[in-house]
Length: 71
Image 1 (spheres, helix red, strand yellow):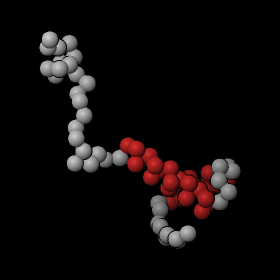
Image 2 (image 1 turned 180 degrees about the vertical axis):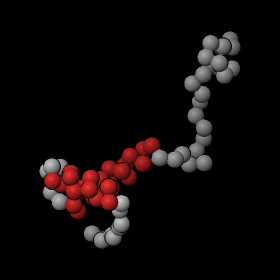
Image 3 (image 1 turned 90 degrees about the horizontal axis):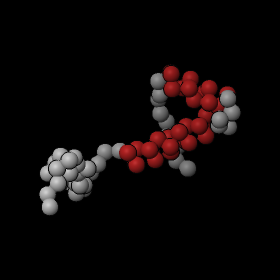
């Protein structure tokens, strides 16, 4: 597995250390790997929309108003 060196703010390091102390993770390496993986998955599902994607349909009525429809 490739090794990566990062620098994180002290408050993040403290939160990671607390999670390890509470037994949420076996060690810092596992905590960082799992938290990074979870963050990437969350970003992938709710991240920015690509510009080349087609826009979806509006939730409003056909004329742009919730209570206005054309028959």
